[in-house]
Length: 392
Image (cartoon, rainbow, N blue to C red):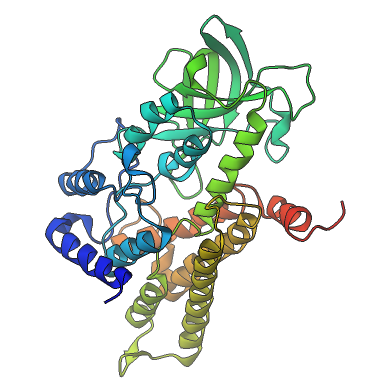
């Protein structure tokens, strides 16, 4: 038996003994927020995975990870998907700022922040976009002025996902207003629980409010929480975006691998089945086509990860973000279509079951995937310039 096969058997045994029944199927997933109370099984699942380093399986063991190779981590994700278990931890801590801290953080910063992220003890949010600085992010105007051992921050951010429940924010701020716009920007970390920070949720068409406006009025970021060099934050900020796009595009290894099967089950339930097959040929063709596209995408992402010897995401992440976002939208659209009128239930509607209401919310929410993390137009420009080498 190969080493990978042995590890798979080990993971299966561990999951059998440690995954609570309440952590399987749809339900709550921890984001690490100290402001959100977890149900008992979700909290237990997080605790057990954190003890073994499975919340961040590829991170170094000294910071709370399991020290696994990407291949071994993929086995773990495949096995939790097989039993229908939810991921133990999600959010920007493990997907974005954690990897960035591992690359750019000082030893003290890593020791102070990364183990808490791995244990699910802090939720992070992103302070990038501003009302007048979205796609042209380098035009940001939120100011940070040095005051002794800290920075005083004034300004506004928008579309700050999870800001209402986050414990910490990582933000790009302007520390030298006289420098060219890509210079004079610094990358800072700051606590959200302070008098100088105010958040205002933005209600979306899906009915949820994951995005917020965030206002800074003499908010404080300690100088020890400056990540990278002063006025050189643009480099750190770009690297973090590559980690973000890796997650959205499925390069992180944690992307769900059973969505095709889930679509087939929905089709059989709402369209009908005969001899264990979807009864309608045209629907069967749609489901098969989408499943093949998803499988091809996942295999391509797997190959890209294996070929990337450095382990650091590059400009190719924009390709996966562009295609992966479209696949997420196509999956939600087909799911809603298969449900017919049952896939149009609103949040306060009567007579719709949980799965139907979730399908509607997903369909509406996933309209944003081609905008956040860099819009499709931004990704196409990056691919043209950085991947294909086309002239401006």
